[in-house]
Length: 232
Image (cartoon, rainbow, N blue to C red):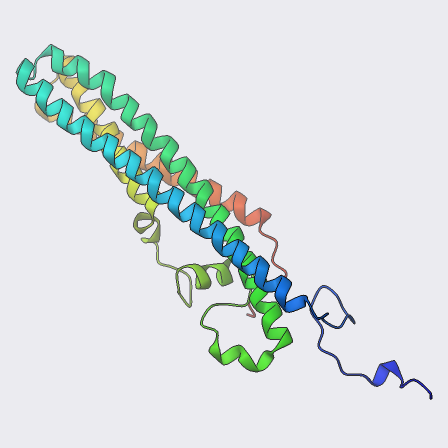
């Protein structure tokens, strides 16, 4: 018997392996990788919440300690010295927390990108299932956003303050402002001047966090290489 012409065959193909028919274990391998990425997302989410909780607990404890020391020293030089030792430590903890949360966000984006690619493979194998998927099958930055925060378009400008790094950055900038204000009072400045100095350092700290975040996002997007970009 003559073999049929291979050019007349119609087989399902998976992008990245043109002309190769999915093997019997293709779906099992994809599902295993999908669950592995889902477990990785769960781990980074847990770490994100843990790091944020550590910072909030340290900040809360420092405020309580300052209140007790303030009452004991009548907010004199002892209080100023204690505050200028304690609050910079809290600020440092906030800085490294924001930095780690930024790393975690990018790790999570990579896992979501991988899951979107697997979802794309699912739909290549069974395209009739597309109406049942509510997350994106595209692995560019817009597709990742649509899958991770369930938005059909780009998030608003306030999204940075809604996310965990933005919340910690604002709280940490308040700590920076408090450090500056207490230092000004310790140097003999009046209340108004101390408030102005504190507000200035609060704004400066927040702008630095904002600039750092934009730089990290820009660098991350340069390394983001989609295989299935969202159609324009």
